[in-house]
Image 1 (cartoon, helix red, strand yellow):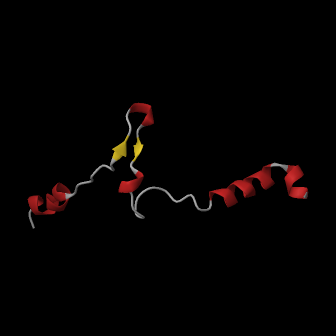
Image 2 (cartoon, rainbow, N blue to C red):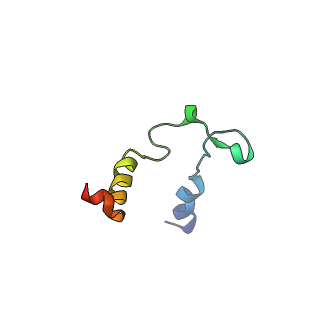
Length: 63
């Protein structure tokens, strides 16, 4: 295999930017263009927040 053959997959790899709506500071990802494989999962954020509050606030941990 030559060096060119080894580089071929790298040359073909591409990433398409996600669709955006708005401009400047109001620019955001288009929610209609997102799917389950894109974005972030914040489903456990509230539980984690409550855990941190209890750990760092002695008044909450006693109740």
